[in-house]
Length: 414
Image 1 (cartoon, helix red, strand yellow):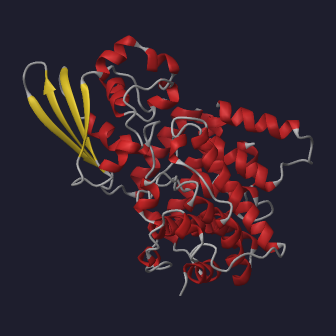
Image 2 (image 1 turned 180 degrees about the vertical axis):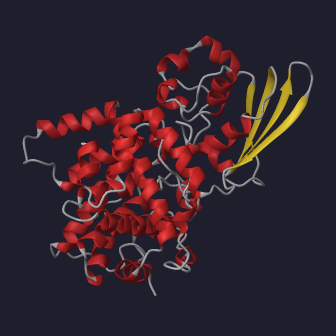
Image 3 (image 1 turned 135 degrees about the vertical axis):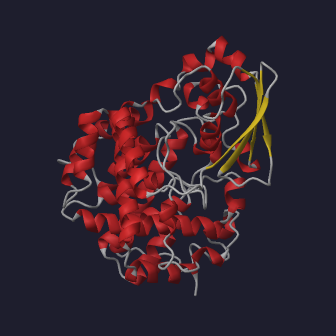
């Protein structure tokens, strides 16, 4: 069975389990917090202003434009979730597409579509393989676009033929490069994925045709985008729900830095030298040696370690500023930090070798793959929400994701 046929069958027949839906409801809450918090960011303002400049289009923006804006806005702070199976941010691609098409539908329908689309994003990411990511493609934008398209297809009730057409149409539009990391282009990638998903599903629903093997054919997306074509990525799809392993952020920076930051909580003295050891793939993602801006600070092992040493909260959004990048005191702390790679570590792990000024040495370690039960996840995400958007708004967003329809959530996000 081709990937297109396998995915189409899954979209049409999948019945998500309750435990996975509970996780995706939390993911929706966390995504909404990030979307609200990101509204003041430059990329969000630019996209909103351009939409306004194009003229009034009724009470609400067209779905594709709303998905573009909300996708970029929710990824602007880089505080959203990650799935490490393919190293992609699923929610910022899939949730905006779902919300844009959910008017008049129940929240349960939206959650099912979001879960199914997110699952496809990860599965397509696995099918593409690590080489696709390592050569420079941004999985959030590429695999995420197919996930957004399939979430939209589920919501719109597309036939299997239309689903395959939507995959083909998405394959000729999906794009996004890691070279944009540290710039507004990175959150834009998330918005483009969400927009692509909405448009591909709408085009297919309207009768637009596409290559049946747009994803997997000889000149398809995989073949032309350094994809491995690993069919094992679709093993047990619909039985094993990979979204149960979504990883939420508790630091306002690239997720590749989080294992290190969690390990650094074990420091217990005045540090003379730190050596951070990480998986080799993170070296091209979040190892900016000398960040020049607040955005670049979010992609720098040396910088976040220096912030931790200085007692600056890495969980606070406003810690990552241009002033911090230029701060001589933080620069001096950065000089105490070295970064190394070790292929023996997983992408979820970090090791930190510490030399204290009193001569003591220690080794710290953290694995983000350590189990996190649902109650703990709820507690940490609600604490994060209250810190990011304030208690009252956090409570309103939490109530909205428990509601029967999507109107309250849409109104809060704007």
